[in-house]
Image 1 (cartoon, rainbow, N blue to C red):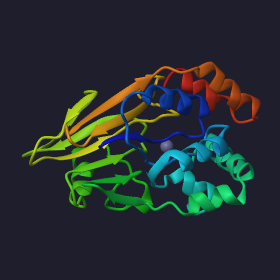
Image 2: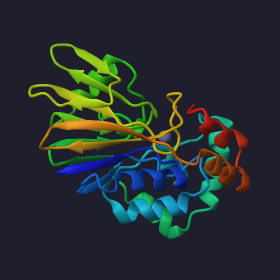
Image 3: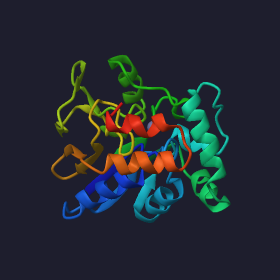
Length: 240
Ligand code: ZN
């Protein structure tokens, strides 16, 4: 099976459509989504509609939970807070019901999906160190877990010790445990403005992190025209 794995779309329809176009012809059998479909961007309804239609397994992110009022947004920065309030006003009851239906963790076909961490998915902590990775690896029933949240693609690999890799191609070696952060479709933060996502081939046991250029200026204009904070569009141009 070949899977396309999308995370942190953040209501960026321009980026999402460019990613889907780049996947055409890649022989993908299933689409999976790791949450944060909404928040920051100006096209939450459109992105929800697309993900609901194409994704066979989707987990919730903290911005999806924030839109539902399930988590406090007091510790969000002021722009994220403003975008959350805007998002709530621009989603229908049907959209919210779809978000409500999303689980925090899914275990499918020999791998796990989560937005933040497996050890406390409801807290939306970040995996930044080998120890953070170790805590989630202890909760992995299989040898692979895909996650998002930090918007920075990185792979943690547990052999004898846990190391990390920034390589765009990852081999899942027998006897290892692997945590793959697939990066962000709609708001990359690794100083590369190109949309990020992953392809996973379960037979070849390989993961590829792919990057796609899209019309960032159009996405920024969509955010500005919606009356959202300008900086949420401007940062897309720098991938920060
Ligand atoms: Zn996010």
